[in-house]
Amino acid sequence: MIIRMVSCLVALAVAAALSGCAGGQPAAPVGSFSSDNPGSVNIHWVSAPDGLVLVDGLRTLSDARRALTQIQATGQPVAAILVTHPHPDHVGGIGEFDRAYPEAPIYANTATAEFIRTDPLGFYALTHQQLGDDHPAKPVVPDHTVAPGAPVDIAGLHLETAEFGAGEAVAAVAYYQPDSAALFAGDLVGNRVTPALLEGHTCGWLTSLDQLRARFPDARILYPGHGAPGDPAALIDAQREYLRTFRQLTRPTVADGSPGGGDVTADEQRSIIGELDRRYPNHPRVASLPNIQELNIAAVATELRGENSAALAPACRP
Image 1 (tube, rainbow, N blue to C red):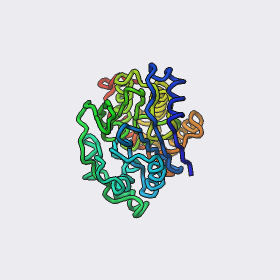
Image 2: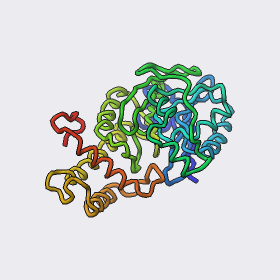
Image 3: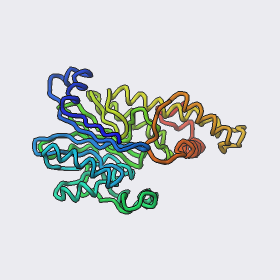
Image 4: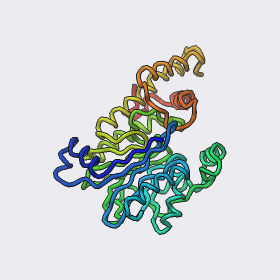
């Protein structure tokens, strides 16, 4: 089992290496737990004056219980839970934290809370079917709303926020702690992982990455939904490069005169996967789906077929 605990000393060391301790201010102690591969997912927690603030809630109840053991070992209560986006691997375990700390508010933006409440794409039902009772058919719905761009002040901790539209997920919120210059970006940014592009919004995702970097230019350490924390600019650039490469490799398959007439052929699919494996070796997939690359190609091909090149946002132009 891959379990990573990023202690106060580690967070301080990374922040100091990247930014001279964020202008002389001490970094807030940040802890993290990573579930097993395949589909390893992170939960982070920040030590506030009046307790711990969790960021996301893992995929399964059993993963949440393992993380809870580490969280409780700190001796601090959980004061709040922040949700970055509504994908099953980040909300399935929230019920375990809610049972342990029923008074802790759960924050999300309106679109994320509504997605969790209604499951419009059937994500939770499918995950429950795959994992059984270890993933609830209906995850706990957040009970506090993060208004667009509004700060969150909880447990003596001040967090700035930014809301994003459809990209990696239908909606996302990033949380930024100015004193430590720590940015919690959820799945907007992964670190050396094969992402899920299943919702077919890579153009929106690329636009969100530009907005994320512009919104928090002073961030010095980024905690992703998957993979290790690191330098925000480097991680954002790497995520952008992956998405642009994926679009570049897929675009010829939907062009006029392509072998499949706009449909991705088996040979084209194998060629794309081979090139991705060559360029991005040892990038574990963020979901337990063994055919995630094939599903990603199908989703991005559909997206590209429907795009108007003349109306593309600058971030998405070839």
